[in-house]
Image 1: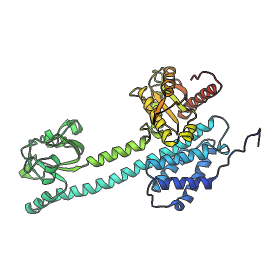
Image 2: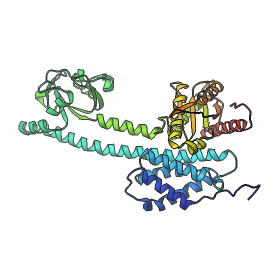
Image 3: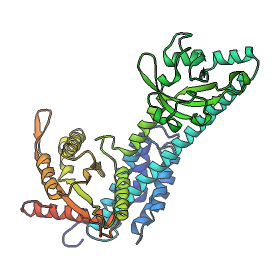
Image 4: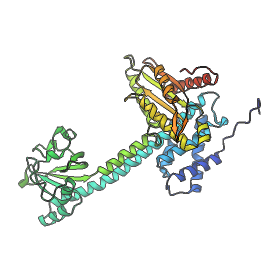
Length: 441
């Protein structure tokens, strides 16, 4: 003991691995119990511990930890959130893990957490794309069989045409429907033979999504035929999305005729959009998550570097709630979660449409803004967050410390240096507040 202080808690890989294994097992079915996760997670902790103490952390090795989580079946947003909580507790709260004293430790923790989150997001995206590729391959195989069937006898074609779950529409050289199968009629909301005589162009919501701005089959120029996902309009006015494959009918008797093969991908598209949203947003507050904010900041810094000398500027405002742990300990996590949601809503309300507001830690927020009035924005943050929060009839007040930094056109700092500068400013605000002086960023 030194100066009457208790000894610094020691890093315990076994206890941390157990806490991590229990956390990811509780977030969803992974096919492996707690005991099955223990050894692999202990090895991943060893990687993080090595990178924590490295002079120059290898971001690829840190990202590999997030990727390995996805490979082990831990793919839910909750699994990532609980993982970041465990890592934050293991490295952020233990003095023996700090690479050096002072505020550099929070910046190092940010590198570790963002690296794990980035690797997790990349692996999850690659997994989704791989699954989509398999689905498209199966659909493409079904389409090829449908096209081949067209060249068989009329009886056999009619059987496939009628029974196919893929919508099939045939148009003449003027883009008018001459035939359609029951699946297509259901998709468009027509009773048989309601599609016949309809101009195919009327079903496309936006022809700009087609090649050269032309509707496939609306003329005889085969160069205008475009495949891909299109938004279509049904007879009752509803819109839906279809994966459209268009081919010119190879028959002397049907010169200029086209065959449309339609697969309804509305649900798959919504599912993909939902997964993309969950991978880039905090599930509790709906704000951008750490990975999304850092990616946006990286792009902004790259744009600033490209435009250097022409006035491009990147503005950062770091927000940290004061004594938030006391709120959780005193009132419970339900109240704490509500405080975080109200904080997110208030930060969104005072920022612009082009600004990014992100939750990058338990009670830490980051604003990437286009405004050049950072001092004014910081004061506004203090004002709105100081307003009482009514929860179950009780009024609670939350204070926040803020830190700002500005990346000028001549600035050579990287992302971590900019975040570190904002972090230092935020800690300076905390010290002034604790010393009884008026907070100022």
